[in-house]
Length: 331
Ligand code: MRU
Image 1 (spheres, helix red, strand yellow):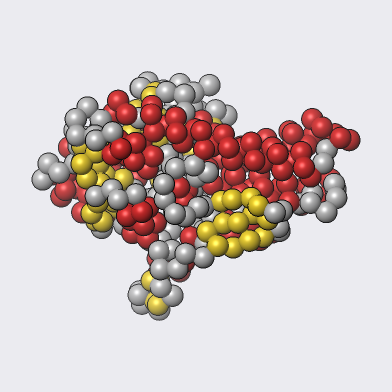
Image 2 (cartoon, protein in one colour):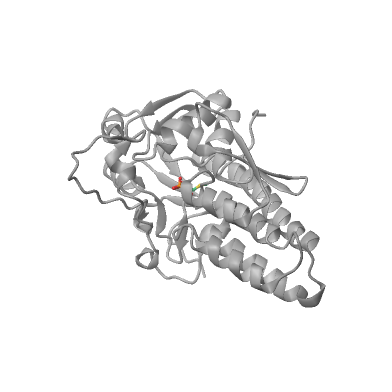
């Protein structure tokens, strides 16, 4: 077991690790304010698709802590929904809390809403475990694995999506080594995945994103696995910018590329990835590094936070239900 947590609800407060400060500083924040939770999601203090949804569910419950108010519920819902557009888990969790609120009408209480948020959190813990087990068949031999962004405990309620497939493979002696993309521009790989691999004693090398192709050419990668922020009905999957490039490299080198995500990441209302809204982040996230400007003063940047991997590049999608193989048809 690892000695850090991501999200925990205790004594009327949501406790969360401030991911912006990792790995140098392990700092926990406590709040009972939905607005502070929304701010944390915007700033990426809380990040990763399932974790955003769980935190938003706690935010909705907390908006009713000092008395039930439909007006405050709507304000919290709107504020949280405006934080980040791509990860569908956010909207899934918000909608589930709204349905719960409406279904209980006059009998609704803070305690009931909190219990529903805890249920969302607890289900995610179980879904992470199931993904770890359902992913085991992808390791047909002791494998060297490449991953992108962060999909571990820091991104979810449990032990991770893609990260927990890797971790479960490692615990079952089917993973030899992990190559973690640094994940420019915000370095979720270098700061967070490397931190979590270290905490789990899994052997790894950090690589710059641009090293992946050369590594594959050298025969050092057996398979790739990442998470997802939104999966369309046909299996097209949005994930951290750079995932599409990684999947295309895998195709070129004949290396299987897998996605692991809970079914709350599947958006059955959209047919293809063309309909996935892609978040554009502040240009400063690319133009600056550690608050230091690295590009000329007049430089502009293009900063999509996510890209979409076409279903045709995905060898399998691991959910808590099973390993889905192509063709995908989530309806
Ligand atoms: O911008 P982020 O750090 O929230 O992006 C996160 C990712 O792209 C993850 O790969 C995805 O949310 C899956 S997390 C289990």
